[in-house]
Image (spheres, rainbow, N blue to C red):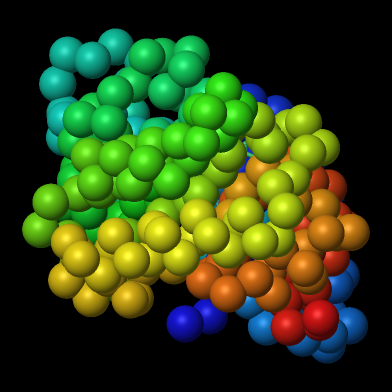
Length: 250
Ligand code: PEP
């Protein structure tokens, strides 16, 4: 399985930023330097079409940050998975902790979105992760396992979905769990996937939460870490590339 380095721009950026980002990617690729990871950018929805055009010919996939669970209908302001696929997306993030917290998304809703994404031909990136209070009370493994089991799409093979383990307290905080803790949760997630998903060994498990160029090689070297979901550091092409280039550099 190739490592997946995914950038989530959240509600950041502009047309100009997308142009500058793609230009930097193009300059990097022109140097002939190798990146041994798959790369994915998830810009805000209004920039997906621009990003698709700008990324043309670059080895970078396009993804969205959310989708609606229904294929079409009277859902003002929402975007269906089929529309994202129509725009050229290959992936969509579902159940990011900011959506779970700010929009009250439940595991059942996240699962419905993941199933809609799969039905539209997209690969859902299903986010799970414990809060700081849950970790402090020793519940990190139980909470992430329950989120996983209740959010993972039904009848989807391990090749059709990605899981992102993102401890909520590590997102945007500059704090990162110890490598042993990351390994412990990732191994637990893998064991769950092996139990209830067909081809559960094939599901890439990304780590997310304050991944930077400085800590990426260590995190990507942890057993069962199949890549990274990156927020803040994905806004600068140089940092995003440095993280992707750190795959296998340890
Ligand atoms: C995220 O929001 O998915 C994330 C991991 O953010 P950051 O890298 O900024 O911690």
